[in-house]
Length: 74
Image (spheres, rainbow, N blue to C red):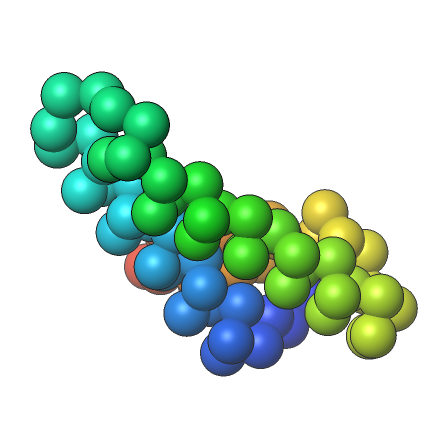
């Protein structure tokens, strides 16, 4: 399995936290904007790291999600 960088892990954690904040309130464009921005930053970083390392983009993203969302399964 791919070994994601600490930066990718931090970016995905930020996106997860922003999503939790957005879903805790009634929907509004302004309320969801931080999540969209965090998710987009994560996706850009995954693409850049995949290109730089030659790792498959999907495998890299999956590895990050496993570390963040399922840490006990490592």
